[in-house]
Image 1 (cartoon, rainbow, N blue to C red):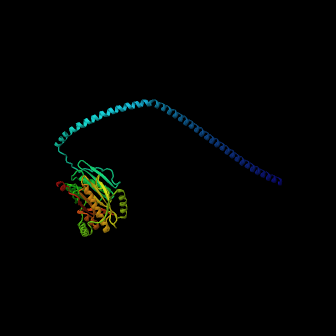
Image 2: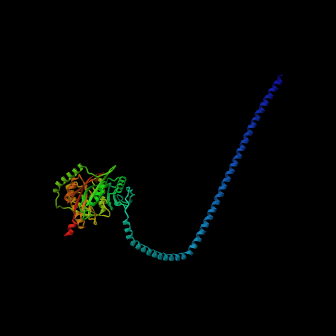
Image 3: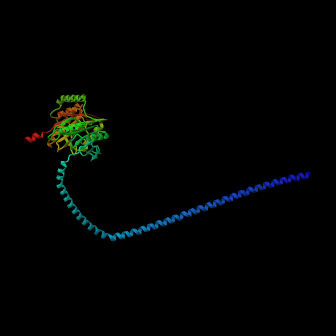
Length: 441
């Protein structure tokens, strides 16, 4: 019995040992299979990569061959084109010469036809005018819509512009100063038209314009007052044989108004009365060096004076196609005073502008000398009148104007720029000559 038990134990152990060995063999086989699979996949990926590289090389070679073929074809076509051009050049030159001759003949014939047509149109014009006179003009039921402004060449850089408004019944020019927010209107066709008012207000509000003036003859004042302007002064001899009447308005937030308040009128009267008392201190004859200077140095001085905050006028353009002269004046201890005279020989008027306000008595003498010298030179040129604008509360400047022979002929609401704000301005005028009296002599 003992032997049988021992044999059974041995057989059980042997079976367990065989099972362990078989399990180890199975795991080894599985590991070997996995290793073989990995090797196979690596070889397959290497083959694919080598195939792709070979394909890329083949495509590059093919593209190079195509590019070389195209370049060769282009060279051959260029050579052929050059040969053809060299062959056709003499033929083209001959053709061009013949074409020029024919075009000249055609042009001569066309000019003859145009001159004939013009002559026939000129002969037909009076007939058409007489036919139109018989017809009654249509009255517009609605106010005309303002057209967009046509910009002309800018003057003084881009500071001053000319804007033209033209419609069936209105035609005028706006000289617009962007620096001083000021506009002068030159009217070419008189009449109290609402289109003028609408256009002026629209442009001024767009550009931030504050003051608008116009200079017209006496008959046209009523047409501008109906549009919203106010007569603010007169310039004697502005049109040589007739006076110029200055009408102006201030552009507000809602409407245009131009009336000067009573307190401002009294303030201007007080300044003039104070200046009249001081005129006696200005000598009739005194030593002063006055000379005419060019524009470029004056403009440099102007910029520096305005940076310091002591400037009065900018010397910008006021009229159309006007000439300008600059004068420099100095007395012993005074600052160098600069003035400008913008004039038009055809109309016989001149605008006098002063760079800086006088501060001392010597400055006043230097300014008076410059104003007198400019007046003498303008009268020698045949200029009839001179005018200028000055702040209504400046006594020293008013004394200089009075001593130089100027007088107050108007008061403008916000007529001049002082610093960054507009102030009421006195219109100073001087009659340099009387052309009617000279003709009667």
